[in-house]
Every structure is written in structure tokens, then in C-alpha cells.
Amino acid sequence: MKTNHHTHSHFSDGSTHPEAYIEQAIQLNFDVLGFTEHSPLPFDNPFSFKPFRKEEYLKLMQDLRSRYADKLIVHVGMEMDFIPGISEDFLSIRKEYRADYLIGSVHLVRPNHSDELWFTDGPCQDTYDEGVSKLFMGDIRRAVSTYYRQVNTMIATQDFEIIGHFDKIKMHNRNRYFLEDEKWYMQLVRETLSLIRQKGLIVEVNSRGIYKKRSDSTYPGLEILKEIGREKIPVMINSDAHQPGELDGAYPETMGILSNAGISEVVYYRKNQWEYSSLKEWGK
Image 1 (cartoon, one colour):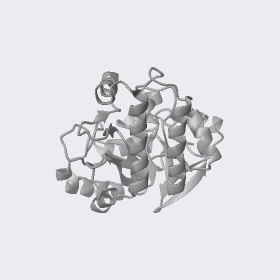
Image 2: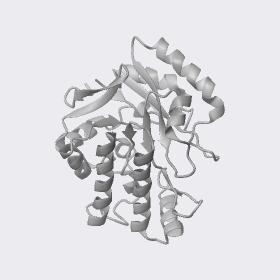
Image 3: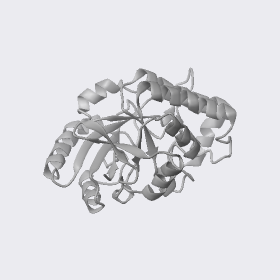
Image 4: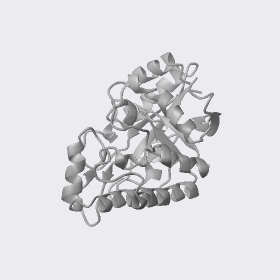
């Protein structure tokens, strides 16, 4: 199997039409391609799916799935942006958009008793730094703890299958504010892993940081993946592609990291169920 279950087209913050991704996936000998636009949010932003395009999008995806059925399995999922008290309930979005699966992610952190949001993603490191300074008074432990509490609340309260790049809070850190082996940080990670295991979620191993040169490793990285392997939590490899040329971005490196972590199989979605492939066979 060769798969990617995390893809953004121009219906959210991707670069182009979904069909361009499908054609590229076929050229790359993919078996499965899943589209996961950013879920709608009730405020203006440049990355979320716009609800007025729902019927257009669903009709198009139904047509593409049918047209390419003999060459590629095409799924229609969604990446859910979870913000407490702001984002919609995941189950309602699943029903409304008839999603095959959902990825749960946190990109915007809502500090306690605040309507301001800390944007932890995107290409601009200054935005990350400004949020730490302005919203958390420069206290990185408070900022990172708030992020993981929001992730944990999402796991506990929402209905979804895949946890997206759950340690991506490290992306703009680059060992400036904290080190990933610090006791307080790993305690936060282990609490999240415990909830992931209890909920039976699949951990996405996201390669985007490597091929975009924003990280030296995957999200999550090697040491966390070793714990995931020991706990036998299922994983899948995703590129989080925003352009057709990114569909298999850093896949060989990611497979190597998983192998070094002692993980020998990955999950993919086919025929309305989750299936396993050995790491050696996946990606061929």
C-alpha cells in the first residue's frame, strides 16, 4: 500500500484543485488518497473550508471518486480544528459533510478566560513568539501546558479517529524555549498518550515538518514514537500535503524514523474499515 490520508486542496488552504492531487497520486502509484480540508470556523480566516461551498465540494468529490475508482481509492474526510467554546462539535460536522473519517488537530490555542487565540502553526515564527509573550507573559511552560490541555480536552470530548501532528507545538520552538526531553514536557506528552490509548485513536506520523524544513523530525518525533511503539498505539504516515508535489514528501525518512522507533506496521483506511500493512510493504 501507498497512502496519504491528510491532504488539503484549494477548498481550504491547499494550492489547487482536488483532481490535480488525484492525478499526481496515480503517477506516484498511490492506492489511497484522503482529502481533509480544514473544518469550518465561525470567524474569518484564510485557511478554513467555507460552508457556502459545501454542495459544490461534495458533488465534485462524489464525481471524482466515481471517475477514478478503477485507479485510486479517494476518501473524503476532514481535519477538525478544535477550539474550546468556538469550534463546532465534531459529530455534527461528520454528519453534515458525510466524512469517511476525521483528523482531530489543534492549531489555535485558547488561553483560559481569553477570547484571543495563539496561532502555533504557519510559516511565521514571530507569530508563535508574540503569542507566548502577549498571551502567556513569556511563560512557555504555561503556554505549552495550555496547548496540551486543549488537545486532551479534544480527545476526551470529541468523536474522531486520527490525532493530527499532536506534538506540533515544538515546530517554532526549535529548542529555544524548551527541550523535548525535559521532565515537565514529557509528562504532558505521556498524559496525552494515555488518553490516546484509552480512546483507541490512531496517531498520525506527519512528515510535513521535514520536507518543509521546519523540523528535524516528524510530528511526533523519534522518542515519542518509541513510547507509542511500546504501548502498541496504531500509527499512520501522512504528508499533510498542501500541493500535489508534497503527497509523498519525506516518506523514506519517515519510514526510517518509524523503523528506528521499533514500529513495524502502519494503518490505512479501505473498504470502510481500518487495515494494517507492514512497514516494509507500505510505500512500495
